[in-house]
Figure 1 (cartoon, rainbow, N blue to C red):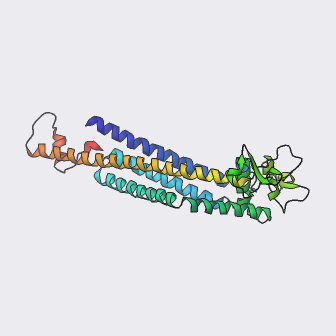
Figure 2 (cartoon, rainbow, N blue to C red):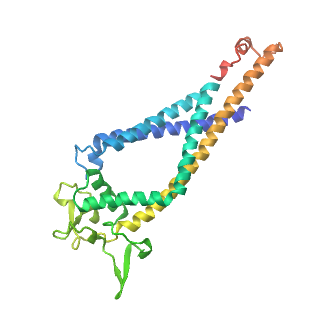
Figure 3 (cartoon, rainbow, N blue to C red):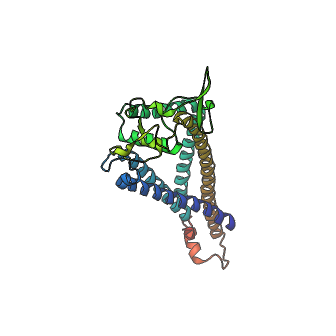
Amino acid sequence: MGGCTVCTKFLLATVNIITIMLGIALASAGIVILVKGHVYFPEVPQYSTSFHTPCAIIIVIGFLMLFFGIFGAYSTFSGRAGWLNCFFFFVFSLALLEIAAVVALLVKREYVSKYILSNFEEWFNNMNNENATELQMLGVSTIQLTLECCGATEVDPSQCRRGTCFQTTEFGEEEIDGTQYWTLWNRNNRVPASCCGSKAKPTSAAYYCDRYEDPNIKKMPCYPSLVTWLEYSIWGLVGALGGLIVLNFCVMFGAKWLKNKDRDDDSYLYTRYNNHDTSSSFTEKTRDTADTGFNSTWL
């Protein structure tokens, strides 16, 4: 039994310590980006408020994870039935939310993908019409830099291969030029600098590049890459949530097992006391605590 207790406490302690570390990391990242976001994302001006809402969400999630980790660690090492019960139901509620999220993602997978794509298209469209917000401009630049693409021309992913998209015409296959998406930017052949791999600020002259003369220009449209990326991301999220659900049930089992073992040990001590056990291992201190039905040595 002692070995099982050590293993169970080790599992719960490991999960709680990782949760605490992740909570501290998230909260710290949110605070750092809130204060110095313009340093890490040069596309956004120094005194922009675009980061305030997302950073606030990250900070809140970080502190919630920190609270959960500390609460779980205290419940684990105290061994008190009441605390372990609270921890069990807290994890159980979290597992139910994760199961609901997995079911929703599987049932509404196409809807979620289309909804996110429509938001991305809105960002590109607003930027093409030069009325995008700073956060939307950052989103478009990040997409084009990460996926090494340009524009949001709607293309079926099956028409693309090896980083190039083609359309069939009467003259055969022709390459689809993603830079042509930026119709309202077509002053002196300009396209956003992120199409050429640059992270220039929107207010700088280097925020544009030449669609024909820049050697680093990317002509692959972003739409097919976004479709593929979203598909893999949704399945990856389902897998991650599935892993968390399994982990949560392991934590729930461990908390329940520790609670039941603590209760059985207290019942055992109380029975020995009532049976007038006078063995040397049953000390006077243990006899006194047995009267209360609670063994202080578990603290």
